[in-house]
Image 1 (cartoon, rainbow, N blue to C red):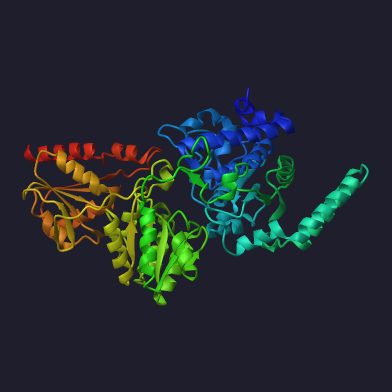
Image 2 (cartoon, rainbow, N blue to C red):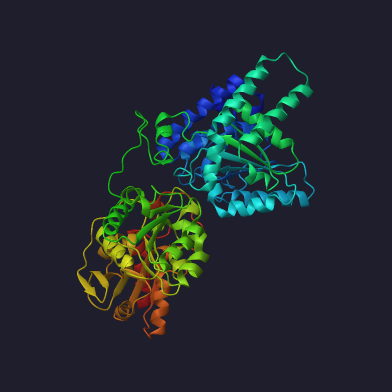
Length: 619
């Protein structure tokens, strides 16, 4: 029987011998490649933490000692070692295992927010709660990727953790990467620790000397360890931690279970906060993932024969944006681009190759990216900030006060807007329209096809004001030309006057068109093109119908539909208006199509809802 099948709780790990631990690590990697290759998910990061996670669960007593992952996508091995290995065929599927820690799944999962740079704040809060309740025999472990330490929130937490003797072990999983190679001064500091030849050669020399010595007593051994630590202190820059009065252990090979356990046990014995620095290789054990760590960070599917990533079937929104930005920037030297450690995923890779002096990757620091963009804008540039929709939430204060208040000409391009699906609640981009609508003077568009994306991006770069462009994850649809244009509105279907007007934008346009073909009454479909602010022409057009229904893949509260209804009331347009959109709730894991269907945002759901609304008008 495979060893992995025998691991039902972390306690089962502690009876294994070194050779069995090595075999277990091999089995885990094999299982990861097989299951993630079928369901999709984060592969490279989990391949890189196999031995580290095994050691964590052999040293610490989860769930009594909480283990918090930052970010949560590196928790697959943790799930396997806490009784969920036999459920991995359901990974990221509706009703199955989440791709991140999930409190509903296991008592071993304390925190399920999967956004970066938050684990240290969680750890401080939990540790302080333990102390105040007299539970001083518990440790809190935060597993932090070195990329997460580029986020300012992590340093805010470190500053507070250093104040008191909190029982926190901070495990820095240092593979030099987040999505991209980790950037910034901190990355250079860690790189020095990884690569300083003086440190490596000196440590090898000490190791050889120790091995040649006869058996020594505990005192002599302690002296050698002190010498080793002292030399490391002289040769490796550690002032960033010593100045905070946080103890530091490392660096060591995070793929060596024995060395990792030794470091963790040493940290566990200490009464205050400790940083444990493990060097790992993202994608370890799979050549393709190690050699191309960006492409294998997250995968949709792998070819089961070759292990290679399967190519996309068609052009995506991200691809289209990438092409259009490069084309437009060629004639606009003031256009620059910023991203938060997601150069490739947001489509800025081609821009970086073409204009290497005009691209700025700030690390996992969305707040800094937005304010820096505001600074660039007021000084004469036009920044394009490309991030996932869900991550704009993290920089809302900067959006409203630094960009909005200063009327700065910054264009935000929000990838993965609306429902993303398998990545779960923390990655759905369902709040961006509501948030953006609170910024006075901001314009927002959700292009329905590539031609409208080109037009919207061109307009955005011409404007000296905040602009948001949003689009969904996945393939870009065929161009849909209007049958009529009215003062900036695109009328896509013109039914007989007086019945139902469907107002849809972005990915909801195909849904509206499909529903219009199925509805028994006369239906017109209009794309406002620019959804925010609500245009006077849309309000005027709405007054010509008996029923107005808005469709949007964002939350109804604060969305286009509610704003249109308010604008109609303020203009004296008394027409029943219904808003169809995402519920004001956190969506479960599932496919994008399934979640939209569950919310009534597919052709069947919209047809049923509009039919019922129409019937209620007649009654």
